[in-house]
Length: 186
Image 1 (cartoon, rainbow, N blue to C red):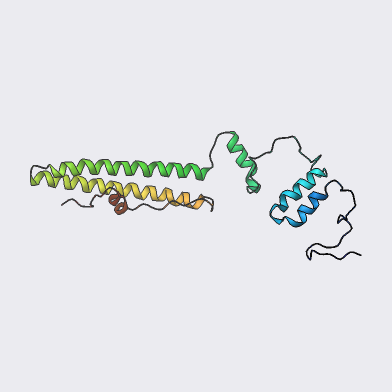
Image 2 (cartoon, rainbow, N blue to C red):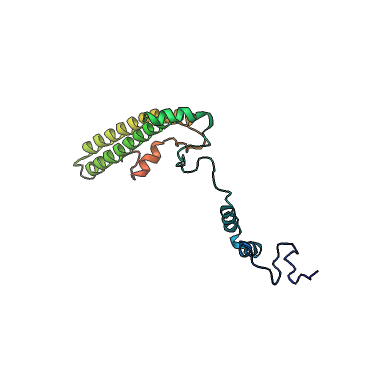
């Protein structure tokens, strides 16, 4: 019996001995034993050479990559919505709320620019008083709009899936701060 000189290499019957003719795949087996960095590639290549990947179910057909394995019982409902180009209710509510938020913010910015310019060029105290009252009316109107939008945000946040981000409620002070507008003109 020959003594093993490599402590990591076990003595097996498939170890080539001097004088033996090399068997096909011996080089590959030796590399698998010593080259740990490429072990997975070597195992896959070895399996391919031995024909382990031949005649697999679905071979030659394209993969169905649009199937979501996490949707579970909602798969049929999601497929029907997608096939008919529809959105889930919670997504439509989010889009509607976002559209109203954008419209409110555009209105606040536009109105503030108009009032700021008019207030800077006001000719007298009576004109400034009228502008102050008009600005106060606009802020009250926005407060009412924000209450309505916040109700829609609450409805959306209750219906949304837990994996979707919730919408945060609006506050008039934050919306005015966004455009550097004061609540009261003085």
